[in-house]
Length: 259
Image (cartoon, rainbow, N blue to C red; front, side, top):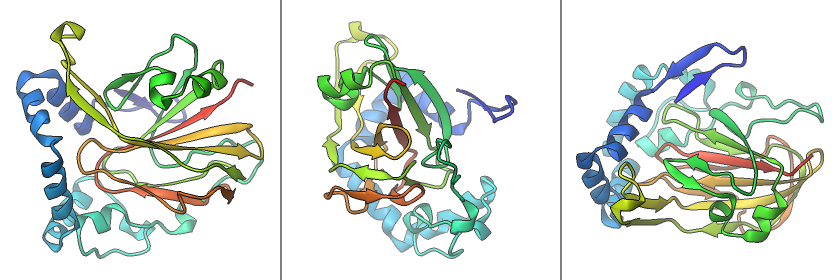
């Protein structure tokens, strides 16, 4: 993918994560490896390693390679890779715009924006979705027709906690389990597998932007979505932390209705 900064200057194209995914999904060898990596036992083993003290040796090389400024964060020493990956930032390092008309980003990311139509398809974490397949609801898909879909794509070097984009009243959390299986090759030579990542979403009756849908999409392997107070409807504030991802590049989606 090609990315531009706020001034329109291209800042990167086909980063390391993009190249890795291209090889994983775009080659026969990569797809065979993929079929092993997504097995539950492999994910559990990888998750335990990332939580263990043994994984702490990976932190320093990663920080240096990706030029991460640890002075922005609440601590600089970590007991495991996941301890580093889920690190908390100092509030002063990520101030949220206070103006009511400011539509804020929920996380550090690369952003893509799409119009929502009945026929629209969106590529999210290398899977094609319609609005109905993304939300698993015809009713929800219809309610957001004519609006916009914002995909906030986190890469491994991003800060992996995310927040609410506005003040408002939050609904309960909806959980959609992931799916992974092979399909007939006639469905597409390039993607002879079909997968849906685990995802969760809530509806936010926001103070300034109508009813927003905020969805978190987990990583394929060991990535885990951890949302705070997930079971209860409640009032929230702009910039309040909603949750975080455990290890793995992940995605936050925000849907806004027409108008």
